[in-house]
Image 1 (cartoon, one colour):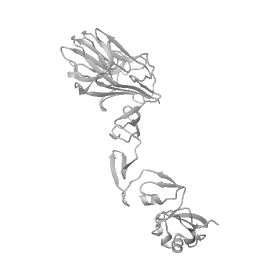
Image 2 (cartoon, rainbow, N blue to C red; image 1 turned 180 degrees about the horizontal axis):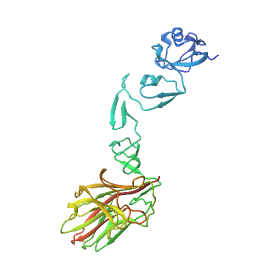
Image 3 (spheres, helix red, strand yellow; image 1 turned 120 degrees about the horizontal axis):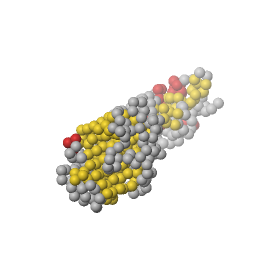
Image 4 (cartoon, rainbow, N blue to C red; image 1 turned 90 degrees about the vertical axis):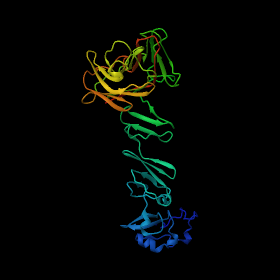
Length: 382
């Protein structure tokens, strides 16, 4: 017969228990009440285990507090905390036998025994700050549900816009490319190398003087100068299912005007517009507001985004081509949906137009620039 009281736990004062002080050390107790009656309250120490007859089978119980019958609970290998049941108290957690595995599920937490709890709501998720440390219960969700800040190194899987895994670096959420992502890293090497093409006197592409991680595209001083970035080779992103997402971060330092006019295209190179998906800006079209365009090679579909370009403002442009069910293209500016197209969709994604960004001068002899930071293309299969 196993002993009825364990001697390998500590009492409330931190001293190891001594069996000689414990009444009935080898007794199999008939019930919880019998165990409490036989073991004087002074010996009901946190973590103390006893054997109780349950339906004829010796079953281990342990004292989580040692102050009442209800605090004598059955010992299990896996202790589950869920929705306020099971362990919900710091003192109980502290007294759990050390071989228990603690499983925490979605729970509500209330302060007790001096614990300080602060609740922070993030839409469908709940975060908790406990005694100055964070217990984070969110792991995935939409862009809108993603907290503005996180813990250093914390990860979050975003389910919309630029879908994928993000990590908080202490200042920003950083997108983590995977095997289905082409991320154009300006200085550290690229999945698909990024080429810069120019045309015209003084046209250039170089590291931005205002932002280390960005490229600065300059039209030069001719009235038809061009500067653009594009993949160094055609990409094959074809398929009939899944989604194709392009994300670009772009700033127009000085707007187009009647003296020095230019066209910005985000999603394709300069020149004749053909098959593709892109944003377009110039001052004398659509009242200087960004347009959203898609082209099947024969006919384009052009819509107003409703967003007027502002000089020096960094914009995040996202297109999502959804090839599942009812095919459509959604356009986002700064994470706000600004257009949806279901007509004249491209039927293939082979060509360097996809992902390219360009600025093309149409009048004037003063150089104009475009600052291009992150450019990412992601394919979600299936």
